Every structure is written in structure tokens, then in C-alpha cells.
Amino acid sequence: MGNSAENSEKVENGVKRAIFAIIAILLEIILVYILYFRIESKYSWVAVLITIMAVFIVLFVYGKHETASVKMPWLILISAFPILGVFLYLVLGLNKGTRKMVKRYEELDEILIPLLPRNDEELERVLSKDKSAGNQFRYVRDYSGYPVYNNTDVLYYPDGADGFNAQLEELKKAEHFIFMEYHAIEDSTSFKPLHQILKEKAAAGVDVRLFYDYVGSMGFIGNSFVNKMEADGIKCRVFNPMNPVLNFFINNRDHRKITVIDGKVAFTGGYNLADEYFHVTEPFGHWLDTGLRLEGDAVKSLTITFLENWNAIVDDGDDISVYKELIRDVPYESTEKGFIQPYGVSPLTDEHVGENVYMNVLRNARDYAWFITPYLIITEEMNAYFAMAAKSGVDVRIITPGIPDKKMVYSLTRSYYAGLVRNGVRIYEYTPGFCHAKQCVSDDSVATCGTINLDFRSLYHHFENGVLMYDCKAVMDMKAAFEETFEKCHEVTEEYKTGRPPLRRLVQMVLRLLAPLM
Image 1 (tube, rainbow, N blue to C red):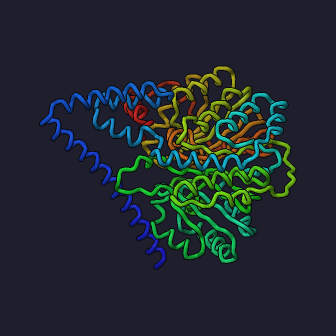
Image 2 (tube, rainbow, N blue to C red):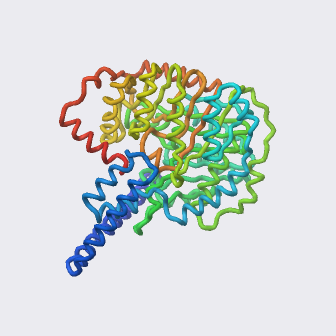
């Protein structure tokens, strides 16, 4: 009882600190306004200067190589409210962090990515079997740096709880290192056995590292969590803590979910390390999540993905030269005939790899393309890809939650239904509860699974990771899981063909306009 009260107090303190940081930033915005109006009342030329600045920023935004869905809200906001619009754009809209962070990631990637093999032979083998799939793998390799692998076995878990239990068993076998990176960690029932294993392994000399996002975890754990882990020999770091000082990197969060064990086995998928993901608690009905277990050469890529954020978030990172040993070739002979490509996604580049992977699946689909996502907030370009695939005769389906975790986002998700179903896309809502899985499967050959939602935050603002698969058993296992899930869904396609009431449509139009700013 005492521990529960202590944990609640720590979480409450963490939330209070986050609220304080948000209030401080809002106060900074108010201060900017006060200073502006005081100066403008004495010097009329200041208003002219601000207007000129706003015009130049509008032109800058308009000329950027970005989707109109992202640019339009900023153009309207800056034009209507120049001071507020310019300020918010500098904080949230640039989406490139600070120059310091961009440079740090560039320097890290220049060292880490070359440690991975190019695997040209594997790519050529895919191209010879399926040109479309090969081109998809080549795109991901050339624009994210992550190669395609053949010598890797993949196991798909249609329930995140099964993936987590398998993960616990594998962690007990660790001999050299354990790397874990998660958006959210809750120090509660599900985490206790995991914590015990990590503690025992650290005491046995295993290099144990635990990494989590501050915002993603602030409702679950407090700042003292790091001290608790360190006391047990577990190296622990926090991604991008909120602070009351204006932070241009604050909009970029770590949404990745990765576990790497000895460079031999890795786990990833949609689930975080919290009770609701494993059915211990069910605040939003039955929680549907999925995951993957990888064993073999492809684990190298997830190791590099972890090491990128682990080092980028501190000024005095590790000696990178030691990492050559961490991604060494581990003897393994897979039984899998297919091809696997784990990849990381960064919001600090102009290449939106996560979105493009999904759109390429739609573009190359011949028979079907099925998606599941907790949030459906997409650009006009992706909307067009969904529509064109469906209009071309492809069976395009999207599963979204039947019970929302965020009502405003749920309304925004539903605002996309009418336009999609008019073009032939079929929409299903998962009636038992909330679906948190992020995956798609197409034509019995290609599939993706990972952390990337079909929303602006995942596609444009977060650090993410995914796994692209071709001709693997896991692809067919995922298809079977989709077919079972459809049986538990309510198809709402026909309901949205008739349109929406005017008031609801107006509200949803406003939400759609603000979506890229959320």
C-alpha cells in the first residue's frame, strides 16, 4: 500500500512539473504579446515590421516542399494572427528541433549507419523476385540508411500481451547487453517482473539500458524513476524532458518501442510497457496491440536505432567506437525464406519515410491492402493514395477503434470516413475496445508492423520505427489476424456514404484544419 501511494505521489509530481512547464511556455507567449503591444504603442513602425516578417514567413511556408495539408493551417494562422502564428510556428511548425539537435543527429548517423551492411545482394534478390517490393526496400535503404536482410526469422504476435510474455522469457537469457526504448513506461503490475529481470541481469554484469520519453510516460512515472533504476544498476535515460524554458525541440517525441538482447534477438511493435497494453487494466475496453520478434542479422538495425536516440539526448555520449562490437556478426542460420527490413524514422529530415512506406504499399497493391491504426489523421496526398487504390479495384480496408482513448482525436478520425468511403475504401471499427496496433498487409506478400500511426504526429513529428517484410510467414500470420479482427468489428462504410449532419461536419472541418498543429 505504501509503495502504491509513493508511486502515485511521484507520478503526480511528474505531471505537476509538466503542467508547470506548459504554463511557463504559455506565459512566455503572453509576455511576447505584452511586449509587442507596449512597443507597438510607442513605435508604430514595429507593427509594419511584424507584418513584413509575417509576409516573409508565409512565403517561406508556402514555398516549402511539404504537403498542402501541413502548410495550409500555418498560412491561415499566421495571416490571421501574425504574432501568435509566427511564435507558434517557430516553436512547433519548423519541426526540425534546434540546430544543435539536428547537427548532433547528423553526426551520430554519419558514424552509426555505416556500421550496417548495405546488403546489395539481398536487395538484388528481392528485385529479381518482385520489382515493386524491391523498389520499396531500395527506397527505405537509400533514404533512411537501413538495409534489407534475408538471414532473419520473424515471429508475429497478434496480441501484445503474448509478445511481452515472450520478451520476458528472452530477457532471462541475456548474457551481454539489454537495450530497451519505449514511449511510455508504467511502474506498475506489468513492469514488476520486467524490472526484476533487469535488476538481476545488471547485478550479473549485463549492460542494461532503459530509455523512455518524458511526455509519453509523465502520467505513469515521475523523475525519481531514473534514480530508482540507477540504484539497481540499470542505466536509465529520459528523452527530451519538458522544462519551463522555451524549447524548440519539445514537439519532437520518441515514439519508438524497441528491445534488443545481445544483438541476437529483438522485439518491437505497438505496445508500451504499461498495464493497459497487456489487459491488466482495461480503461478503454479490450486493448488490441501487436508485436514482432526478430532473430538474426536484422537485429543489427534495431540496435543502431536504439543507440541513435540513446546518445543524441545527452551532451557526453558514449564512445561510438565500442559499438562495432555490439553489432558484430552473430552466427545464425534462419529458416525464413523472406526478407526483412527494420528501419528508423526521424522528424529532423525532409524525407517522411514512414508515410511513404504506407503510400508505396497502396500504390503497389494489386488485390488488397488492409490497415489498422488507432488514429486516422492523414494528409491529402495519403488520402488520394487510399482513394486511387480503391478506385482501381483494390480491396482497401482500414480498422480504427470502437472505443476511443481521446474523444477529440476520435471525432477527427471519423471526419475522414466520408471522403474515403465515397471512393471505395471500407472502414471498420473495433467494437471490443481500443486498437493500438499500427500495421498493414497487402497481396499475401508485403506487410509492415511497428510504431507508426496514420496521423500527423507519427508521420511528421515523432521518432518512430517499423519493420517492412516481404514473402515471410509473418505476413500470412498477420493476414489471418486481420481476418479474425474483421469479425470483431462493425463495418461503418455504408453509414458514412450518406454524409454527416451540417453541425458535425463544421466542427470536424475545424478539427481537420487544426490537425497538423496538434
